[in-house]
Image 1 (cartoon, rainbow, N blue to C red):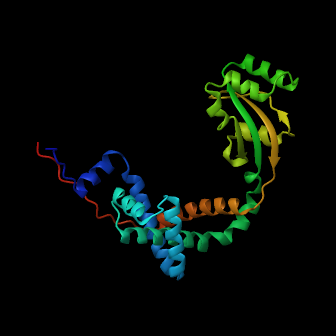
Image 2 (cartoon, helix red, strand yellow):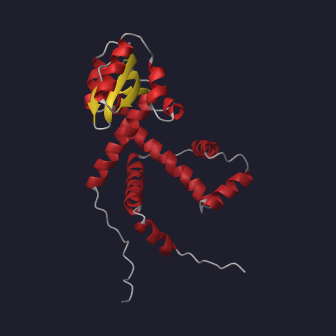
Image 3 (tube, helix red, strand yellow):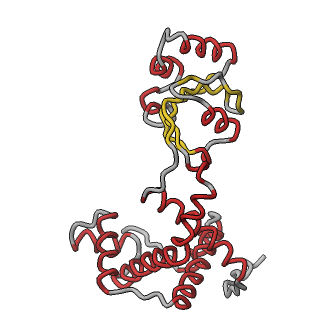
Length: 252
């Protein structure tokens, strides 16, 4: 007969503490309370149709194609049907609060930081030795070999890397200053002289540059950045009273 294990909420609470998840959980709980208060203050309401659409989107996200899939998923995550509805409500409310407080600020933020959102398509490999990096640089300049050949020769397990670091679309703000300055000062298509970094010597081919454009994807990205900044500012203005008390010390 198999042995049984009885779990209590305190067991799970202790595990969250011992795996150092509590700071994240506490921050998320504080953010949730801030969002609830801000939504009430702003008079934000949620229509039934909006809530249903969000719940449907959640099912698509988690591939819940049937009622059985949904019930199994809820059981796996220790959720009830009421929890699922509240999850959809909370997600939608977060989106509406972000939209209410941050969307009007997007055009001004974009205007002030437009250069940060410029993009470049780059091909990049890291070479350990400086002489080899220079040799490859001159070889590329002379068009004696292409970047793909260098990837296959000098990157371990090249195929996965080709889907990742080998070719990247990067924003200026996402690169370290030692890389962003030369990448965005270049006149593509061009290969840059090797750049020494902590990881090694970066050999970078700048294929294209794209000026920043305030499209829906970038609007969403900026909105999330502004919202995280707004939440941090709000958290500093609130007094947090925690009723979480540590468990009693074990007897000696």
